[in-house]
Amino acid sequence: MATATLTMDELLEGDNVKQLTAGEVVTGHVLSVRKHEVLIDLGAQGVGFVPRREVGFSKQLVEGDEVTASVVDSELDNGYSLLSLRKAAKDRGWEEVQVKMDAGETIDISPYDANRGGMLVEYEGVRGFLPVSQLSAEHYPRVGSADKDEILSRLNSLVGQKLKVRILDCDRKANKLIFSEKEAVKDGLAERFEKLKVGDTVSGVVTGVVDFGVFVNVEGIEGLIHISEISWERVNNPGDYVKVGQNVDAKIISIDKERLSLSMKQLTKDPWLDEVEQFKKGNNVDGTVTRITPFGAFVQISPAVEALVHISELGGGSDVDPEKVFKLNERKEFIVLEIDKDSRKISLSLADKKAKK
Image 1: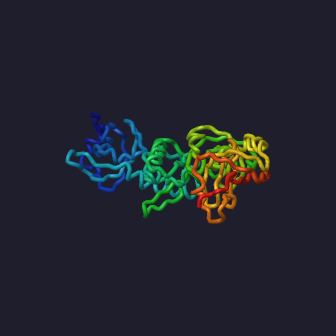
Image 2: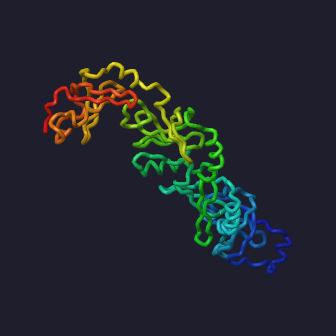
Image 3: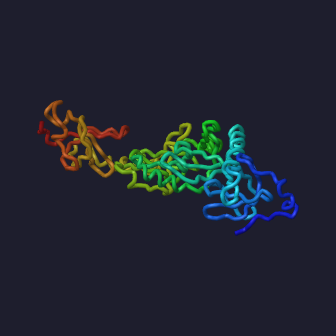
């Protein structure tokens, strides 16, 4: 074990050496770094003992480093002084944090842990929190059905990563320090938004797949591809079309202050326009029932064309129950009543109107 080195003058001074007192801040050099403790050379004032928990998560010490510590206990049973690097750093850190927040500076942090609410951070000796809601579009855990375990898994992947943030709230009395990654990227986002326009084709990375669509990170800007804009065919599960981490191209269909509305399907020709040409008013067609509603049923009459059989066309008057007339996925024969190409709508009637009541 390394030992403190005293000069002859310090040894001769003997009783003239100032005794340490609890709360005092001292400076020394690292003697040794162990798994559970760090020893500090305090010169004539002896050796300081720092438990690992009092070093701080952001500290990576090596022998010879100069450190500043706060005295917790001037003398332990083993003759060492009990010190805390965290407390000394925290006292200085609050002042530094306040300056950074007032200046609106962007700083680098590396979370040391995560929970379902966000990331645990230590900055300048002060522990803080980066809430999930303050993560950027690139890192926000978009998870279907709010799967808490998956959210935590996504957050854990950020532990140890360097993130650029701004300080959102700083209150020393309440011991509260809140960071925001969203705020740190806002300035750059404004410039990028100005360069985009409706109709542009953009590339991005899928960050989340949920029941109602797909979230995409487009150079730090969050985009949403609604389930209705994934494909020209009916989409029941967006996960069948894209996966998290996949690169996709999409067309911008609208822009708001913080998000892009995107479409994958509009980058391809609408097959409905070609397939509808095979149907004529009065034709008999076979179709598969895809949805049953209180006002009728939707029927797939070709891969890209879906038509509606309104309740009024089922026979039996307004009291007829579509649930008793149709079964999902059954095939029936229908008659084409109307074709509206502008609205992309086709109306059908049952070939046999003997409906069940």
